[in-house]
Length: 535
Image 1 (cartoon, rainbow, N blue to C red):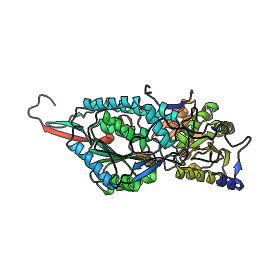
Image 2: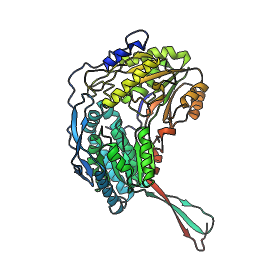
Image 3: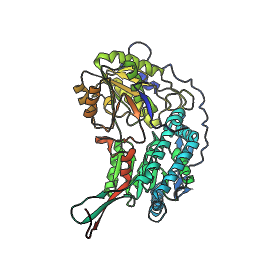
Image 4: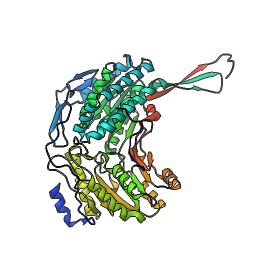
């Protein structure tokens, strides 16, 4: 399967008892039923087409047990049943992994290889990912709950493309010759930063693995990577393939474990030279503090968001509804840059609400391994209950529940696609990151108003604009204080496009040429010149 250059989901062209208790507070939606009829019938879960082969820690090129011998369960979100027991890394295991990474950097062949040799290993790895795409996608879906078709046809090809992109960069990283006043030759060297600590989240496990591991290896660094405790399986499988591709021992080490133990040990380790973290804003603050209190290591943070999706009065409503639906509901709404505040111009608001409701009712919820399913379960019981709590808060605050609002299925962590209208800025569902399939639709009158309201948030990750007017698009693009603006499209993640946030959505950029700078140090080298022919 050829990896596409651009990931573009859509463009302009294209608990029950608890809920019953909500009734006394609710403003039910207009017209037909709020409950989706486009759900897969409840039946026995489909057996995933993959075998669990790797559950240990990967340290110094070998799979090993945790020093304590501990394991922890990883669960199937479809049922809550245990998939496998995985080695539980703690501080001692982080120490072993960092030691292996340090030795590989200081004494091993990786940083001393020619950039072309590193490039060849990364290209071979991308080929192996492509060969094993179906198995990796199955692991990703089983562990996370995302639709298998989404993982196999969109996300794993994106990972492959990212590694090929950075494989291409490996032998094109160089410094500059700098003109200086006086008799001196000045050059800059772009050197690998050393041992990189990386912490990836559970919502896009392997995709974020690619965004971090790819540029770090291309620059000649070694890595200790901590996976999310909810989704440890795909990174272990992929990392085994990376060693098959020729990676020397100790260059990439993978530790499964929990944040307060393994994550804290990595963040505060005195022999880690750089840290990259993707996850919640609250945890990001903790990680940043630990890095500062230890050896003041630089930190790249990609954190939470509450991204506005702005539908202007000139919009094609049908296309805008479909785009906003995808911008919110993709990956069960578990995306940091979801268009989770849908601002719609007052002139088309009522029409938009009716059509957004209808689209949500058509969304197919069910076993992620079943063909045609658009939405699987949420990641775990904690996230499931959190989302239902936000739904309750929306109802109690006076928003109109147009569709969904309940759990779906007696097993697992499925939630109906939920749509709220008459949402106001002071409501929790409009202010806080829900990270679930809950669309909040707000009304606005003019550009000045929507700019002010869109920017009135602690977050600044992304925004979507839907308009046919170039002047309107330009005005909004420059006014919105975010890291990415999508115009008449959403979730376009080309390997070359930088991604990151402003304000409490983090700092630094991943992907593209900007992603390389996270993993390099710039050194100035100054040499006296004697009787130069020119300066």
